[in-house]
Length: 184
Image (cartoon, rainbow, N blue to C red; front, side, top):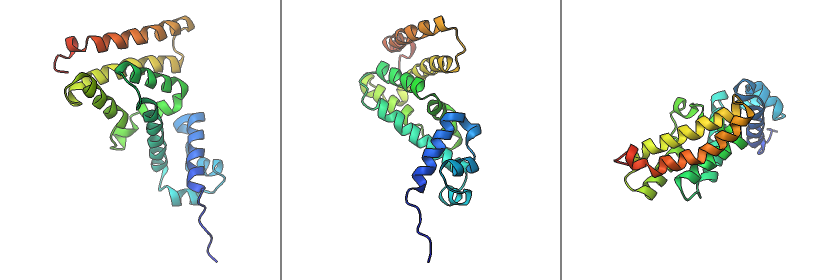
């Protein structure tokens, strides 16, 4: 009698992979480690996911979706930027997965970046393409600040300064966007 497929295995695999990623990053994620953490075996993992890249892609899409849930109800450019910043600090490994360039390597769209461009176009006029530079500038400020805090490469008293300067910088970029990017 053939074995019945385990309907919960794919979820267990992804949960195990997520936990491994959060705990140890890229180095912790091997097919064997995922199998062990999912309480399964390596061949069963390969039946669900052809390779490690497919597991990473599934994790990436899940993290992107989680980030989208955070930003989708924001009502301003600054609010989107602050939401991304808080996501980065509260879920640093997943944030790093989202921003590690994996989408570029996987030839996938960047849904949260595109969402931000569309929202900025709706709020400020023009097309999403017109809002690319503002979106990039906001992301650069948020990402740089978040990574400095995540990596703990700044003195503790500078952390307070970084957190205080971020909203001011975001507001200045948005308020002065027409000066920096007249077509936007």
